Image 1 (cartoon, helix red, strand yellow):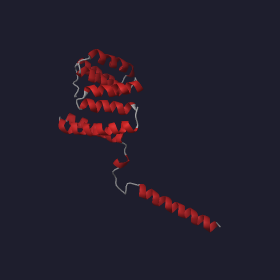
Image 2 (cartoon, helix red, strand yellow):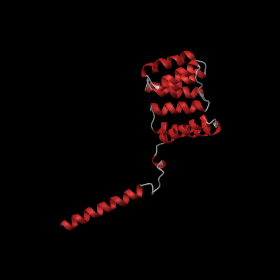
Image 3 (cartoon, one colour):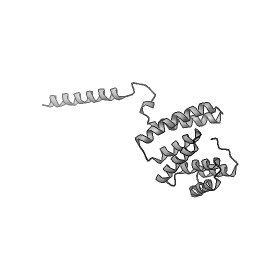
Image 4 (cartoon, helix red, strand yellow):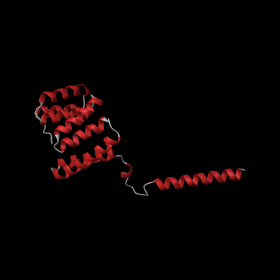
Length: 165
C-alpha cells in the first residue's frame, strides 16, 4: 500500500507542476497579461504625464485615450470604485470633456467624499471652467490632510502653478 500512496503523491506533484507551468507566462518577463485593465490604465496615465512634461501632447493624448478606454471597461466590470472613477474623470478631462469628467468625479465623491485625488482634480476642473468658489470648496475638504494634493490645488487656485488640461 505504501508504494501506491507514494506513486499517488508523485503523480499529483507531477500533475500540479505541469498545470502550473501551463498557466505561467511561458517564460516571458512581461507580466502585462496578468495586469488588470485598471493597472494598465494607470501605467498609461503615468506615461502620458511624462509626454506632457516633454510637451509631446499628441503622444500624451493617445495614452489618455487608451487609458480612458481601459478605465471604462474596468468600471463596467467593477463599478462603484472611487479610484477608477477618479482616473475616469481625469482622463476624460484631459481629453477635453469637462462635463463628463465632472460627472465621473462627482460619482466618485458620492462613494468617497474625502478622496484626495478626486477633490484635487475636481478642484482643478473648477479652476479651468472658471468656478473658483467650487474649487475653494474642494480645497477646504483637503485642508486637514496635509497632503500634496492640497498644495497642488492651492497653487493652481492662486495662479502660481499652471495646470495642463
